[in-house]
Amino acid sequence: MVAAINEWGAPSRGQPPRPFFRTMIAAKQKEWPTAIAGLLKANNYNAAEALELTGQAIAGQLRQAIVDFEGAPLAPSTIKRKHSDKALVDTGQMLASVDFEVKT
Image: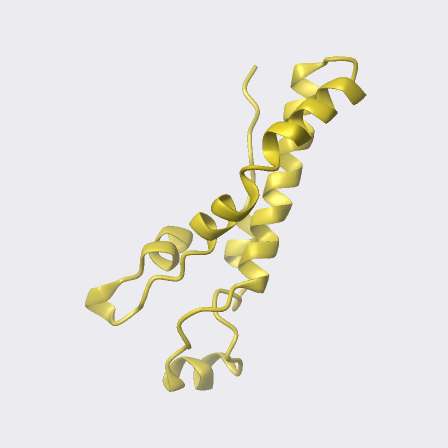
């Protein structure tokens, strides 16, 4: 829920969108097919292993997108509360909740 609110914003609360997820996908998605193909070859065409490694990599890319995000500046009251002007990084809850699941 925290990620969705940050991604799309909460206009009723004056919170602008901070599209870290969509931006990461747009920037990285063209790399994924080649990476998956390489992982398949490197793992003797074990699809489950290749997808597990792909999930780990994409989760890492998403965490990095959260850390690197620069967008709409935070409100002065938010900066004062969290003692930082860094958007999306506060308690670490969102970063820690990034995960993936491979269903076979």
